[in-house]
Image (cartoon, rainbow, N blue to C red; front, side, top):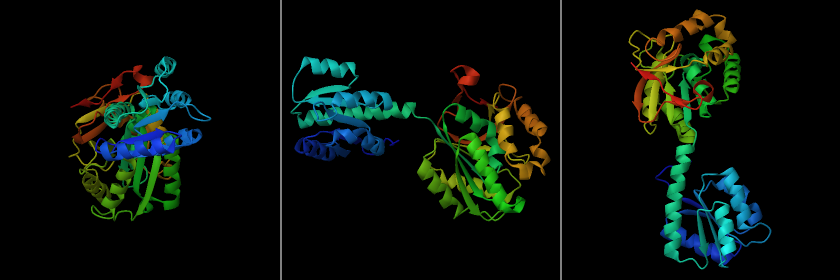
Length: 355
């Protein structure tokens, strides 16, 4: 999804090459837009999917596929995208058909340059605002080792997925000091698949992760690629040096991210002071299932026993709502951490309570 500082992306579907070239030139020079012209309307939907425009401007009368046919398809596949239809033949029937198909504007050719620029700029801005409001959140959880994020925010990540948000996990090492690296990689893949998350698996040296590069560079690369709205990572209040290093590197690499929060690890110190307590009722079983993917660790670590995990969540609920909570230290919060979870709240939104 383009951000508000990027040029508007406009798709012009016009079988007349001269008209298409005219509109492209006007919109690029006077509306400062990136313009894709499509002169073969049969390929329009495929090219639109690849181009991801903010607005589509289409002629009505074209060979093979009419502009109204394209409009109907766009309304099904991209309901929030503005669409302008145009024709050289002024007709009430055309106008009625276009409006019934929910066109945002109906223009007759020739279209004055000033009108074209004004309409496209206004609708592209409105469309971008609507799309941004309806787009799912992108959530990035960063851990130093396999199983870190599942232990810290497995319930919250499961709630995000249930709400339709996109979840990405970035694991900085294969955890070779805690077990066989290949086994731990397979366990991470299994957990990501169970969660429905995208996994980035790096191979920094376990116990030797740096707070500077290459750690910062890796996180910056992933942030640039997935553009998260929320980032969860380790706390600085932790006995493990890798956890502290990932925390420090994350703060540097996520300067553009609106919300950054720190989860609790089993190695967190008594200085870990959460200020947000997110209810995970309905997702405790999902969290346990994620942790159970890491058999190489659950067989060795007492803190991964289900009773211990549930007792921890139950304890933190004394500061938040519900019966079970995951705690977060909020570093910065300019986006809403609340998550719509239909199975829990019947369409309402819940958010973690402040202490």
